[in-house]
Image 1 (cartoon, helix red, strand yellow):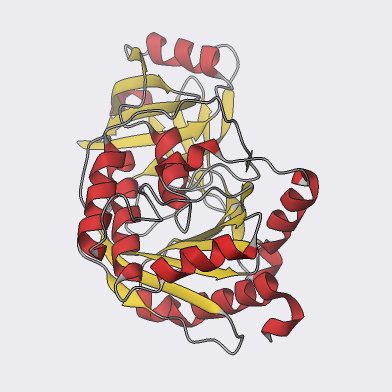
Image 2: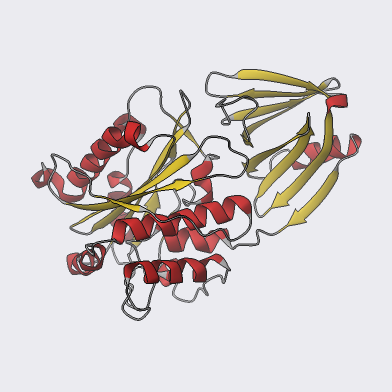
Length: 362
């Protein structure tokens, strides 16, 4: 290799040491081996080429997956974007690795729109309707989402965290495309049946995934916010602007059902686990969470334990929906300890309530 290759923007699973950083990761390739710089305050691990085996490089949709085995442990690095593909291809082939080009088997693009949009708009939420004031609505929806300034010091943003398997990419504005055909995938039918059976609602009457769903004008997702120590924690929000307040009130009527939070978080967990493992994995049953905040307004949530393949410590997925006025906002978090994170997440729900309803929410 004539020139060292520096490739940033990766996430690795599992971590190189117990509870070690897995994102952001920069990979350095040179004649001696592979160096990984992991974490916001980078920690370096150097591995000589003789200790690396079974190198693979795959293009998955618009992203890359690089794999290698070290000391009988299989590591996988993932990144959005195809930068450095030709250079990485040469490195892998030079060291006896293999290449592949595969499509994601589970239709993640459609799935994250369907599930995360949850309060959300149903399977047809991929066909969001653009209103006459789309520019204003987009600006309003973006301003409701959380920002880095809403979190304590020590947090950063990442595009390659665990939640990237669940939430749409940061900043993507989804508006109407009435002629678009929804992508068919194998996860959505499982999630839909799971949710409707859990909530006790028929497909025709279900306002989340079923035939009674409504379409927001605009949907915008925040960045994924990441805290690396003592354990990785991730938070993101997705806001939706509905054309009338009556549309939101009708959605709230279904979301006020007793077990909505538990059923909804379990559906999201099924998506996360399935996309992460590239096979359908139904989640465990969730529990309800009714966030108690000083801010007035409506919110419902749920918590469920998730075991991510290749990750030693268990996590909890937390999902809460805040609704009012023209808005429905979904807070999604992946935390190592629900009890330790509960206070912070409750405060963030309070922030969203205030923004959804304006000054009158306080």
